[in-house]
Image (tube, rainbow, N blue to C red; front, side):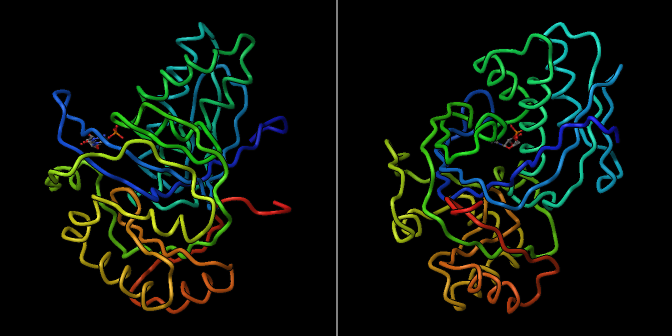
Length: 279
Ligand code: C5P
């Protein structure tokens, strides 16, 4: 760590809505998703270095997405030196919370700001899509709707303030495995999605087409969803391709109480979603 490192919070996401259509010719599925950033975050320290190196003690095999993102950024910008990035991981891996993608997006955004000649936003967005389907949306702090394979992003704005209880059933799920098990439905993907104005409107939107294959691959996900519902969640669902399940609550106290009561979850947490005065 160097004294002049830029400290960045890379916030996790939940997919409040995830509708998945048929597989395209490029092997990806056409989707529509409403992505919310939440207060659970990894912390990145980014500093100038002669060469790019990334250390992430929580992932012994080494990080790949941030390394790829920074190398691609430097190459595209014609920057001969690199960056050192230290990642303090708090977002569980293989959880559907977009931890790796959020780290890559944050590294792209903030390393770009440190370049003598930063790339313009559209160029940064193009690089983000090359790193992963979730990365373009995670360049934004506000709620977004992503379409296509995830790369066509519309910024929606600030969601109403609520609290999430999060629980991990103990086994990660690989995104590819969950998509492979998914059987698209005949109903069409939604058109325009309006920013929910109240928590009730937000709760009513919550739905995930990948919940069926995720719960089939990890039955613990279903148990956690049912427990959050019994504990009074306004809505409960797997996030993304799982395996973390979230329950939406009105207050921090309610979310904390639910997270404490949930059984058979080796990892639980609470996180704020939407606008929070004084944050
Ligand atoms: O783009 P990314 O590498 O994050 O995607 C991981 C995997 O998820 C892909 O290899 C693919 O199996 C699946 N996927 C998909 N359709 C999408 C996004 C991801 O099938 N729109």
